[in-house]
Image (tube, rainbow, N blue to C red):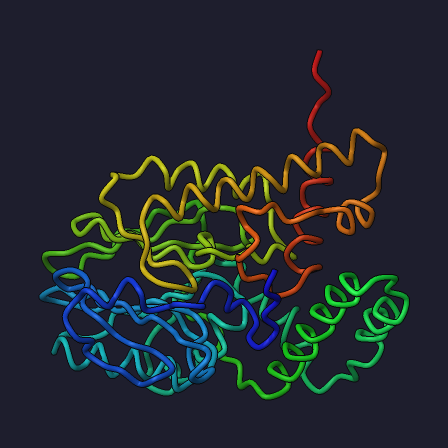
Amino acid sequence: MKLNRRQFLAAGLASPLLAQRAAPGPLFDRGFAQVSRIAEGVYVTIADPAKGEQCLSNGGVIHGRDAVLIVEGHFQPAGAALEIEVARSVSKAPVRAAVDTHYHLDHTFGNSAYAAQGIPIMAHEKVASLMKERYADLKGADKAPLLRPMEQKLARAGSAEERQHRQSDLNAWQWMFAAIDAATLAYPTEPLAPAALPKRVELGGVTAVIEALPGHTPADLIVRVPERDVVFTGDLLFYRSFPVTFDSDMIAWRKTLDRFAGYPARTRFVPGHGPVCGMETVRDHGALADDLRAHAEKMLRAGADVEEAERGYVVPQRFHDYELFSWNLCVGGAMRSLFAGLAAKPAPR
C-alpha cells in the first residue's frame, strides 16, 4: 500500500494524464494542470499535484453561444485564474458563474480569484457555513491541542504498519492546518438550496445541470452536461484511490454510485482527482465501498467498536495499489460513518 501524504485529497494521481494522451494536444499545459477539450464546448482541467499545488482538484469550463460556466474553485487562486483564462480563451461570452462542488479546501481555497473578477460563485447552501466552521474559525488559532491526540496515537503505535497509518494522519492534519492559515477565503455568492435543484443553466446550445447528490460531504454538487454525456462529479467519484470519508455518509454515497452506474454507458466522468474515466471507475469505487461496508458489518457482529474496526481493516489485494492519503480520514472515517448508519437501521423482523 502506497500512502501518499503530500497533498490533501489528491489521491489516485500516479498517472493523472493517461486518459488525455490519445487525445489532441492540450489547450494549456501549466505543469500543475493540463486543459483539454473533451467535447464540443467542454474543457477539462486535470490537476497534477506532483508539479504544483495550484489546482490539486480537477475542474473545467463549459460554454455555449451565450454564456460560460466554470467548475471548481481549486486550491489556490492561481488554479481558479487558470479556469478564468480558459473561459476567456474559448469564448467571448460572459462567465455566468463558477461552481464549487463541495466545501473542501482543495475545491474552494482558490475562490478569491473569482471574487476579484466579480464572478459569481455557486455552491450548495451549506458550503459557506461549513467553510466558516471548518476553516475560518481555525485561522490563526493554536493547533497544538488539536494535533496532540494524533501525536499521542503515533507514540503508542504498536507496529510499523500502525505507525505508518498514524504518521499519515498527523501529516494530513499538519498540511491542512498550514493551508488554512495561509488561505484567503472567499465564500459562495449564490447558495443553491437542494429543494431548488436540479438547476438548469442554459448556456446557448448546451446545458449544464447542477444537482445535489449525497455522500462525500454534507453539501455535494455535480455538474452534468447531458448533451455531451459528461459529468463533473467532484469527489463523489474517486479514481483508483481510497475515498476521503471523514465527513461522509457512506450508505448514501453508495446509492449515488449506483445512480452514476445508471447513466448511459458512454458517459465520461471528470472525478475530483485523476484522469477522465468511465463506468469501470464507478464499478471499482462501488466495489471498494462494498468491501468497507462488509468489514464494518463483520466488526459490528463481533461486538467491536469503531477504533477496533479501523485498526482491523486489511486492504484487499485488488485495492493494494490504490492511493491512500490518511488512514483515519479514509478508513477510519468510513468506519465511523458505517457504524452510525448501520446501527440506525431497524433490525430485520
